[in-house]
Picture 1 (cartoon, one colour):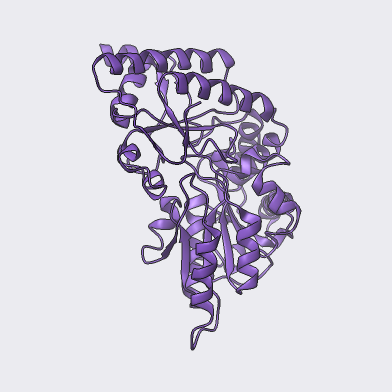
Picture 2 (tube, helix red, strand yellow):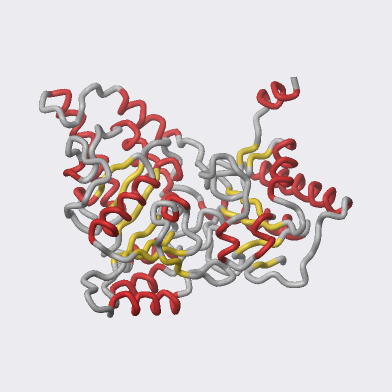
Length: 402
């Protein structure tokens, strides 16, 4: 009975980095796509109509990131786009692979033997270390191609932006190929953020980009790999030669239309309001005893990674779930497990890596829900303090408890 009652209630959703709520424009675009019967590869009238719609979506997605239409390879999501880049630009071309120490498992598990580029206590890529790694991998005897460097535009757990302009400059200097996992950043772009600036000034002109529809407020099951130029790419799925031989399989027309519509809507979002709510909530959580990860550097405007010292992430998630709030302990791609964050471990946070939760505000969040969550979080922290669980370390690098 308790479980049934809980299911009937409407929980407050604050886990946008796992998946954004579907935007109305994306829903309409998906439905319009589903009405089309033809296969885009068919030569009859129905197929041609579907093909026109698919190519229109491809052009819109590519142009949004400053590329020609045929530079957009549609995939089933961000994970496939990342894996295709690792395969096509890395292994198939005989490159060494370097990845950020805080990368998503879509990269980490697809390249388990990759060398890890360290980050500082805030989670920012160490460009000095990256340059040293590039130098040792480009000057060796028999080295014909520079390494493949894989970096997240914005971290999915902490929201911390990568210094993409500096990373891209190093890759050009040492002849490395840069792949950017832009899954979290692409649907939350503002002119002043690190990712937008790197796109605008041409820093990423030679890089590939991984995108995911549902992180923009689009449908699950669609994504794209944006290439720096129209070029062959060794496929993971040869299939019937779709996507110019770079990814086999019948394209999910409706889902790709939904992705384009979601991205376009995200560009009209009032991000300043969301950032203001994020800052307000951070202050409430910090006053309750939380330590905010990466607060001293540029981050996604909707993301909070908060450590409650001495209290495991699992205990916090259970307490907040009972209160009716949907948050997470980090990536939603770990089969429902609550484990220590490899991101915070790479940042040198030690035990705190098992005591952090992530709050990520969705595009349609209500201010009253953010504030009531803040009060619920403060009450929870007080309960843990009264039980003697909440501790306050003397020093914890890379955080801000203002």
